[in-house]
Image 1 (cartoon, rainbow, N blue to C red):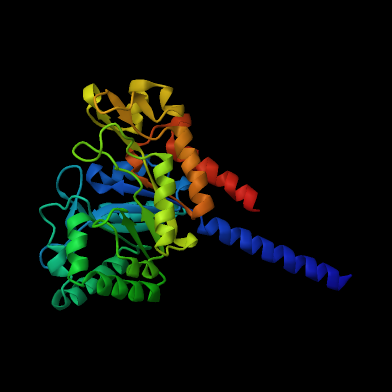
Image 2: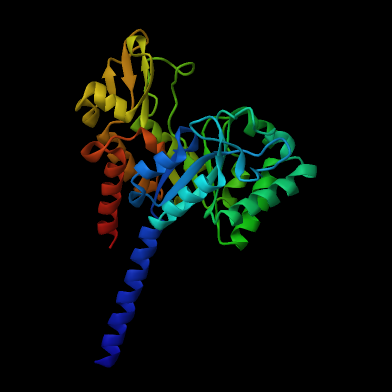
Length: 347
């Protein structure tokens, strides 16, 4: 009887551990742009529905310095002034108190004028100094890790010069010693993707499965972030060797308009303009090159993508949290609800 009871306890304990691990590995990653006002963005976000929050974007100055006294060297707030040490500490503390991990995202698609030249800073004679500065920054602000969001031509230049891999490898080794995370956001097109050889060094990879179409690029008449394209990009990265426990699917909380709707729209703006249509529809208007239409992800599509991401990977990444709507129309809530359902099914 004692042996049977002991066996039951062991089996139950293992089941609990495995279920906990499964949930712990499930990710809801949200970007918060400091340049929209860090404190107000943090205060208005549903932090308890996220596992990781990437505060974006930090850049070193031309000398690889990240902090000038009590002010970031290159990390703008909504006032166009660089955010202060106190502002960043407030954000990190509030994120961690909510039970999420706080990371700083480096780079960004459009580098500000205060940013140093990344290809120069990552050359061998500068790289060690920058890595040390980044690690010191992580330690100083008690961050949970770094997210690399160096994109486009800048990424290509660094990779072609042979300086991307040594940078990522050095960061990975040192962050692992500190039990900190190293993550990355990547596009999927040639010239905008991180090198395949770098994948093993990242704890997880955020696939930016959006912006297939935008104000000045892509084929007008297409969607900018369809469910079918998400499937395609997941399969692409799996074929490149990305492991399931590394794969995080990026989803957009915004859309683009064409013709008479020309412009960019947050999901909240779409809700205010088009009402309940944004629950079920991904397109307002008609898809064609000469048509007036808006392309975005509805609540239903975000829910379906979340389910897909949990089946094929370990969760979703959101660009970005300030675009969300409130209450029953919140995309983050839809994601969270789907993850909760996944958690129940996994137990």
